[in-house]
Amino acid sequence: MIALENMLKIASECIGIPLEAINSTCRKNELVIARYMYYYFSRETFNNAFSFSAIGSELYNSNNDHTTVIHGIKTIKNLIETKDKKYYPYISLMEKMVKQTDFSKKLIDAEVKIERILIEEMSSSELHAMIIILRKKLKKVKNLIKEKRNDKQCEEAA
Image 1 (tube, rainbow, N blue to C red):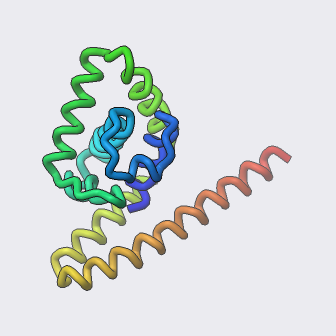
Image 2 (cartoon, rainbow, N blue to C red):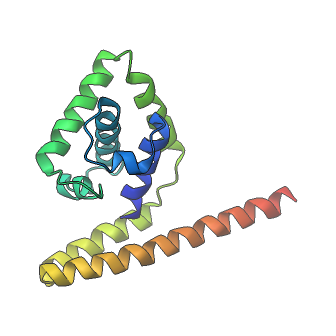
């Protein structure tokens, strides 16, 4: 899902870790915290629109089930409450970056509706193939929207 992919990129940028590292199975503390930040902000930003399983499955090399995501969210909440010296600045930075990012509500709603419809009507192999196709198409739409915004900004600046 495009929205979750973007959230992963923001987590990567905040901690300064390559996206490939976050998607690895490595358990270095910084990588784990980056994943947990992704879980937390994905759940909070999209008002629980995505299930814990959907959030966990977005990590490419992941077998993260819903319990891993729940644990990660609780960990980040605890770090926020205690204003952890090491990780709170990263969490605070990600919060600011997420607020500045335009997660198109219509695009997110469309992703969620499409997935719910497909889940109800298709076999798992058909569902998987269709989701891959839809993700690619939604990514193209998102890129076109970005290009139009950039063109508009360039015209306004000129």
